[in-house]
Length: 143
Image 1: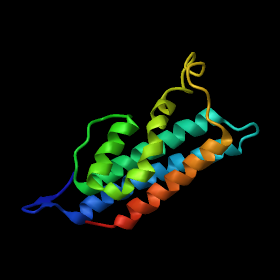
Image 2: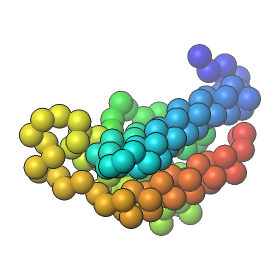
Image 3: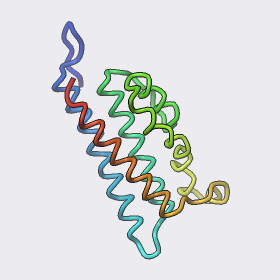
């Protein structure tokens, strides 16, 4: 629960919520890296967890901005909302559009034929982008 004052939510409480999103994103990033380390790598598993990490980071940006968001997995919609508040993030957010399908594409029978798995190289770049987004969000600090 967020504590409100006349000027809005308590900055310390808000920042604790942001840190929660960062922690959960870090766990997805860790799992994605683990999936890439399997022999053979679990590319679909890594893609799913990259999508999840990005989604949680975008929601963390929106919490930091004090912006409400609906329950969604659409990284394009979330990214547009983040870019509206933090325009300098736009170059980092553009590649996320294609990741939205990673949320379900490799999790259910019949879906993988519709969406080819990303390569190890694509997933390595995705993890680098997740790390960059994490650094930017952490760098914002408390409001």
